[in-house]
Structure formats: structure tokens, C-alpha cells
Amino acid sequence: MYVKICGLREPEHVDVAVEAGARAVGVVMNETSSRRATDTEAAAVVSAAAGRVDTVLVVNDMPAADAAQTARRLGFDILQLHGPAYGRADFVAALSVLPRVWRATSLATAPSLQVGAHGEEILLLDSPSPGSGERWDSSSLAADAPAGTWLLAGGLTPGNVADAVRAVQPWGVDVSSGVETAPGLKDGDLISAFVRAALQA
Image (cartoon, rainbow, N blue to C red; front, side):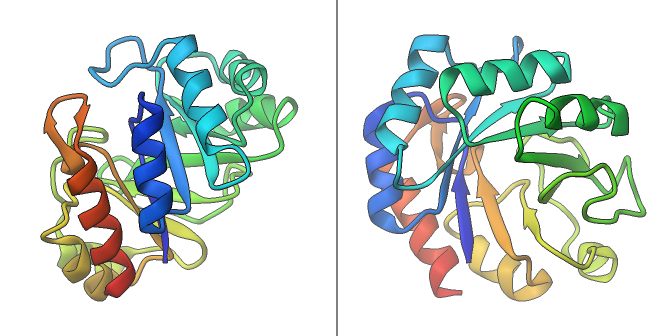
């Protein structure tokens, strides 16, 4: 099970995630996000994670080519383009700069999904309101989930991730708000508990 902890800004939370068994950490650089990291914070997370787990830059309001340049400049392994505003041409532009690009979207906006349709390495399925922490409908998701390498996100917590994994059998899971005590404030104990629950499912 591939576990990604997203929205990190503090190196100590990278250490917690890695020690618990996570495989990736994400940094959000959207202008309007409560989890938005500065360049300095992003670089510190990348430095703490280097060589231990994948590092993912997450954007939803930055031109794709600019986002890829930012990811390369700060040392990220992967760029995650989040939301339906990014079309195939955006992925082509990003991939010309960075070899690993993920696509994050929702079945609510893209009901028929195919992993790799935009050239992405991995697909992330979020809730009907991507980035909100809103939960998905597990029954419909189980029926409509794509084949291939994809991550489940949206409303996951240490208390429900195991049931989610068993219900829809994703390749991996992604969490942000589900390991916070307030918007943008990560909790080390919740991170550890989430990773353990996901890996034991």
C-alpha cells in the first residue's frame, strides 16, 4: 500500500511520516490554500524527505509549465496537477520539464476515467469537492474506479482509511485534512495512526 501524506510544511512531520511507513509526502503551493507552503518551507520538506520517500508538489491554480519549473527548481520528484482545469495540453507542457506528473480529479467532474489518459504516471481520485476533505460514496466509487495505478483521497482519516481500502481496493491512499487538528495544522500522532491503519488494512 502506497501512502502519501499531503500538505506538509514542517520537516519534523516528514520524519514522522517516513518512520510510520509512508511512501510519499506532498507540499501544497496553491495561492488560496490554508496549507500553502512558501518556497523556504517547501525546500525544507524536500530536503528532509530526500532519498527516503517521493516528494510531490501539488498545485491547482498555477500554469502547468510554471508548476513543473517550480517543482524542478525546488527539487521535487513529482508534480501533481489537481483539478479539471488541467487538460491534456497542460500535462504535455509539464512533462516536457519534469518526467513524473500525476493527475488529481474527481468522479464528479470526470465520471469516466482512464489512468494515463493525459499522460500522467498516476491518477488520484478525490471527493466530489477536490481538496475539501469531503468523503466519497464508497459504493459508487467501488463500481466506477479505474483500472491501473491510482490513489484514493477525500475525507480519509485514521478511523476510516482501513474500511476505505477494503471497500475500493486502491493502489494507494492520500490524506491531508484527515491528519490535522485545524486547517493546515498537521498532527504527528494522527499521521502515524493513519499510516499504520492504511498499511494494516
